[in-house]
Figure 1 (cartoon, rainbow, N blue to C red):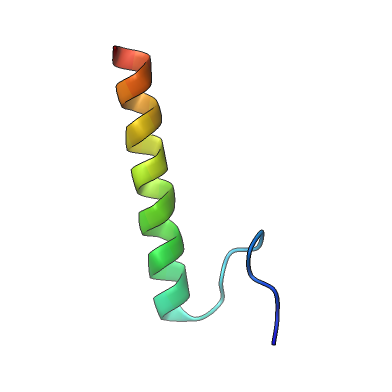
Figure 2 (tube, rainbow, N blue to C red; figure 1 turned 30 degrees about the vertical axis):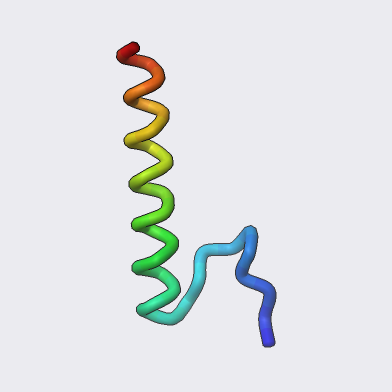
Length: 35
């Protein structure tokens, strides 16, 4: 089993989860910047 904590996951489902997590993190940062 490969460690995918710091690396972008290769498989489709993990990649989708990674992108969603990154997307929500970016939204949170934008909200903090706007406030």
